[in-house]
Length: 319
Image 1 (cartoon, rainbow, N blue to C red):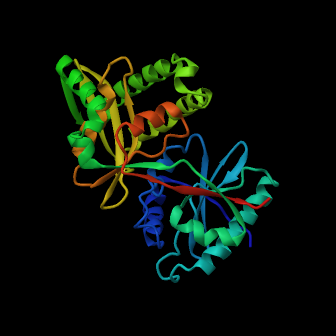
Image 2 (cartoon, rainbow, N blue to C red):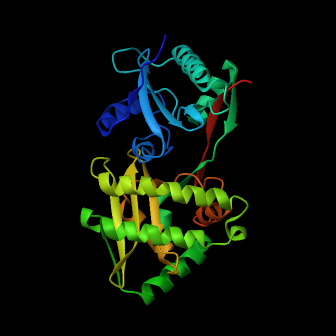
Image 3 (cartoon, rainbow, N blue to C red):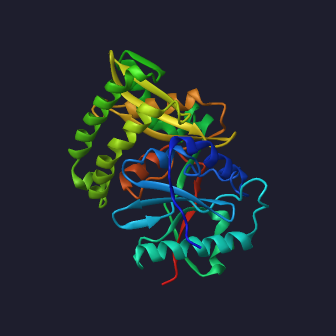
């Protein structure tokens, strides 16, 4: 059976969310990537498309190296039937075969963001499973209160910062876009100036990610309302010096999609993270996504004492 791929549009958001929540794990996994915004924001870097296979909603992404799936098949749709390992097995076989044919055997063929709960189900089906970067999950109250001795360093940086500056944190508005874009450009230049040893052996990867992030941030700053994102900006001494956006993954988990803070201002990053968490205290947990394998990012994320590292996997055809 050939598959017709439909280009992904903002209007597909409701359908995608419906399918994510209707699948057996949709309401349970705290993975931040089981949502529409973290994929749609990269629409100018990757070519996204979707199709349905036996009622399962399948999302694909394509770049120069080939086609892959950033999420496993989701569903099936309401009214089609209930999820079963047999039907998922058939769909996985079908989409893997399609990608293999399209990619002409390239190593790019894969399905990302498989929750750990699916690992034992899928492994016997003959796929190669590799561990992906874990997501960092925190108790929101811990970040807001910063009471424990473990938070001594970020708490001290926060306190020094608030004593030294005139501050105002406010919900993001479209009129803030140009100021945020100017901040992002400055943040990129600051990142480029960091010596490679300071960002670890993956420094070149970090710089590529930062450059490609420009278009993703522009999408968020422009379409935040349509994507249902919560955004805040931080004014320091009269200028926008930080911003952050996120979205609810479930009633329990809020995901921090992106955050930018002027690197030249000590203590600003801890302030941004703590105060943003304060605005979403109704969610017991906050997911800050992965560290992308970058040691400097991992050190920062571990400094806030995650309550859980949420495992997920990538499935490849067995070679």
